[in-house]
Image (cartoon, rainbow, N blue to C red; front, side):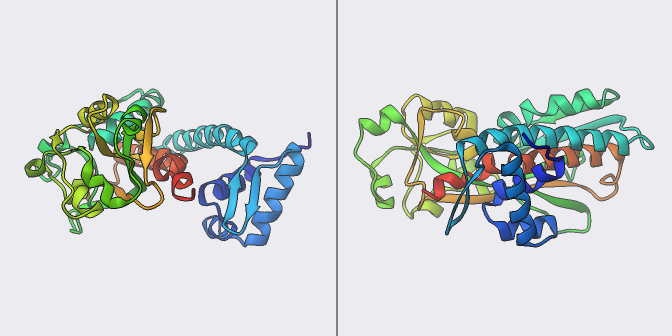
Amino acid sequence: MRRFTWDDLQFFLAVARSGQLASAARQLRTNHATVSRRIDRLEQALSAKLFERNPRGYMLTAVGERLVQSAEQIEREANSFRNEASSGASPVTGVVRLSTLEGFGNYFLADRLPRFAEAHANLSIEMVTIQQIVSLSKREADMSITLTSPRTDFYRYEKITTYRLFVYGLRSYLDSHPPIEKREDLLTHRMIGYIEDMIFTPGLDYHREILPGLRATYQSSSIHAQLRATLHGVGLCVLPHFMGSLYPDLVPVLARDVYLDRDYWCVSHQDVSATPRIRALAEFVRQEARAAERLFLGDALVAR
């Protein structure tokens, strides 16, 4: 095996996440010929084919899929070291309270935030996942992960990631109920969703966007409760890909045609947004989301 560098892996990850040489080149601020040359060099060094080239772009091979996991781990370690090194002059101390949507908090951050806590032993961290009753404007939280970005001078807002939602059903439910061949067929199935008059942000109002007249008859204010109902075969549910993909028995329905895109935003008060504790946490969340872009978007489902 020939030697390769971390720089080669950065080119590999950029192509793996975008599926396009041109997009990767823009991200890396270079040209597509350089990206192509780096990918070829990495494949030669590993003596393995990492991508299938076709008119739609670059699709990962099985070997490429395995390399993504290792490369993302290396990326996280490098970013963590960079953060720790850069924070030497301004130690991260104090208390930071993070308010986050339930799904993002419990099914993404909960498994990652402990690493941030270990790296910042002098920082006290409070994660709140009942965002409906926590007000950033009343100083009940220092930072929030939201679906909207308040366009006012009082806040600093940064986009964390775009994520994609699909309609999921339990495999056994789908096998025992009428087939779903077109969008209108959803009307013949029981839908699971949020309690309509308790939806606290328009971004969670999924059903009317998918199909006029579609509404949930099994409703809960908790995305976790909705997920559990789906796993028990109660009906179909709109779930983020980073949640639904965790369960092999959940199947996306009409994935190429029926999906929604949403954005997560990091919001903090302008007067505290530059403090070491806020910047460190915001950067950690953003880097973790960037490293998990494929998990958030589920591009493979749309491309089928």
